[in-house]
Length: 77
Image 1 (cartoon, rainbow, N blue to C red):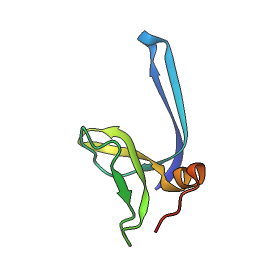
Image 2: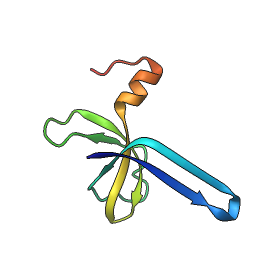
Image 3: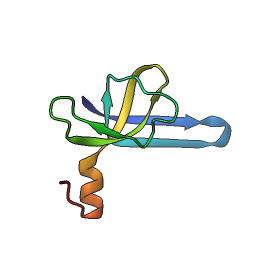
Image 4: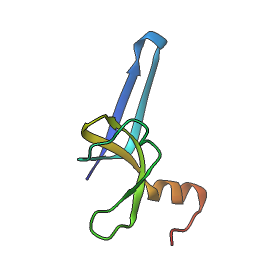
């Protein structure tokens, strides 16, 4: 897993968004998978939340759980 920045553009609407601190992973995602929990493969700990990918293709991207935990003062158990 590698932390990256991802830029997405919608030129027809004049919108450009850059996501930073997300993680790129080699995993096929399907339409509707966004928002699901991503687990670490070795010990099944929560790694983050899936935010996007290309259907039936690599890569996929997720927001690390640590960012959500820190922002909202949560505790993983």
